[in-house]
Length: 407
Image (cartoon, rainbow, N blue to C red; front, side, top):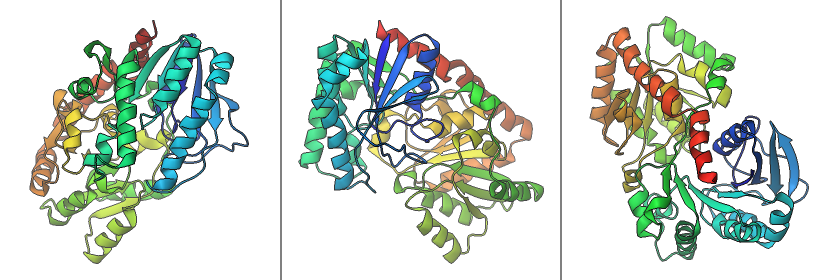
């Protein structure tokens, strides 16, 4: 089949996040399908962006056809980013006939974070008589309202709502990364039978041939290990939504003298968090730069447990599908998850501890429970997560689930 995968922010192993379209496309290519990913030339998620001279510039990467659309650059989540969305979707809509004629898709997947790409997808579907699948990563515009503080009457929010409703009504299937979003989607026009939950996962081969972390990271982590530290590791974005101040609060007042908290990654909040550690003389917290996806396995082997957290938001009622969770599970590390979230794999597979968002004392108690466990007990806890990932959350299995929707 010819599969057209529309994702504004799609990346790959060389460019960086986001990886999900690349992983699925690579698996489907192995199954004999021809996959074209249409993406924007700029994304804030990528390590680097492609050099694109003209719209619909094509490039072959690992057997996948990439088609780049010039959208312009932006920083933050302001007006400039919104304009890049309109450019991306507008160019696809205006060129729908050209896309349908040249690519002849049998399946069109609309997968950008925001739902406006459904309009271009619907037009291409009609012109090519293809099946249309809408993939939901984040709950826009609900995320903008509940996490971003925007009003429902905001014109941008209203436009996103129109796009979301249209996607639910007019797609043949709706693939949700979030396991508990079905009722919400039905309330916005989706027929119940369209809903399919396909979460993120890992690529098993990458864990066999991973790269080593940079020397700076290796030196710090090996020093902490030699000192006998119990390493609580966080890796990922340093944004307000990650609620890392709560982790610093727990580190500052923990009674576990041997604990070391290592935060790996970058983000808009990182300079402020580093300044706070320095000002408040929190001596058991260390910061490291982000590492490549291929280094995550090597990074995690130094951790005694992996931390995930977030702000107390109603948004988490839909569930989560965080890459760092599946990576931590694959590494066999116990997870401390400080989020108010239902059906979390950490709880389902008993591979860590769940505590409420923003509760410093609960985080400290969970850390104490992990610290007091024997190494063998922690290993068994981590192994339960690893077994679940191998069975349910590896991209070969996930791609087969997704492929069933094509027919």
